[in-house]
Length: 377
Ligand SMILES: *[C@@H]1O[C@H](CO)[C@@H](O)[C@H](O)[C@H]1NC(C)=O
Image (cartoon, rainbow, N blue to C red):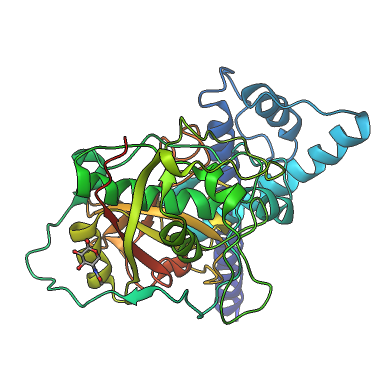
């Protein structure tokens, strides 16, 4: 009887200590985020063991300083602080769901998820309809693909750009792919104009009425390739610089075309085909669900759960397979993704996402483009 009773006590103690552990690891996630805030924020000596939200005020002031944030009114400030606190908790949840990456405070930590989606993404909802000139990429042989591959090492990728507060991701994804293809066609790396796409490309989905590329309100990479094919090409970034708004008129000057589309194709969902197309044709325009990217700091993102609803356009530039810690992912390689939120976001502007199982829909909408050699420079 006594034995049994003490066994029950022992069991409940075990349970309690397990719960205790979880609470403690939750707290250390909090410290983890504190470290992120402090990293590069120039503030030392964050109080260890502070409850995440008790320290929130301090984190918020570091955040404001680090990212140069200021708010017009006390009301706005208090609202942003509430959003910030919710995002600290969100980053903590993301950390638990995505242990092989580091999540924490980013420049987007004072935005609600819907503000973030509206202003910093910009992929129009995924459709199956394709522009009339899209091809299906031929199936390529996949044996002999290198274990690691990175177009940055080959000089085919321009510097990380910044779309600003404009849902124009699709235009950056499209220029990135054409920049790479143009490099392969001409041997020259030329930065191309997103603003031309934002201002001039209103290409519509032939199968979905009213679904057209629309500047800061979103677009699709395949439609951007269709526009570029029809218009003759894209101008250089420096001849048609990015403004981050879509209120201007189209200033396309045909005599200044720097790169032209020969053709573009959709790549099958097969990961080996994606890798083979990447290696053969240059960086690929891909779509992704960006929910984990709002809190991403570094590492290989491999969330246990991630929606495949596509809301962001990015550029696939390579893949790797270096080992990283969690046993679950031991031999799983990753994709290297160029983003358009500036070099201060993520790993110098880049994102790593594990390769396998179409995580966050990364394999769902992949396009390759080929460039023609143009005489204009
Ligand atoms: C696309 O254009 C490139 C370069 O001109 C050519 O080599 C390739 O065969 C074309 N692909 C398709 C699918 O037409």
